[in-house]
Amino acid sequence: MRGVATVLKRHNPEVELIAVEPGESAVLSGGQPGPHKIEGVGIGYTPPLWDPNLANEVVAVKTSDAKAMARRLAREEGLFAGTSSGANVIAAMRIGARLGPDATVVTLLVDSGMKYLSTDVFTA
Image (cartoon, rainbow, N blue to C red; front, side, top):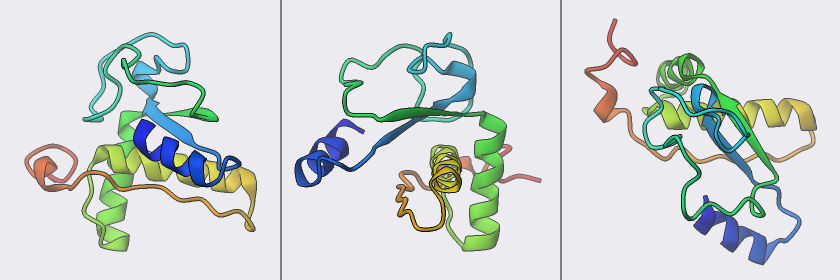
């Protein structure tokens, strides 16, 4: 998040940036570390490059919800992404619902679903 946030804030200081972390290991939100299955996020401690001044908010998303959203994105939108992308979409939807229909909310799908084909994300 640091690189994207730094550039976006440079171009528009008013932009709001939301960090996403696993609900089971919500360390950035002040919670305890714990096991989760959202690969690439939630390392169990505050990352060395984390700058809390760049994030306006931190949203925690449960692994089960992130997996369900990854499946939904593939099935309904044709977007083959993994669990961290599923978590990002859930967070964006929560923020969008709170801000209302006139708000613009953007998120990134940062991983492919390829590495999840043999996991419970995409297996029956």
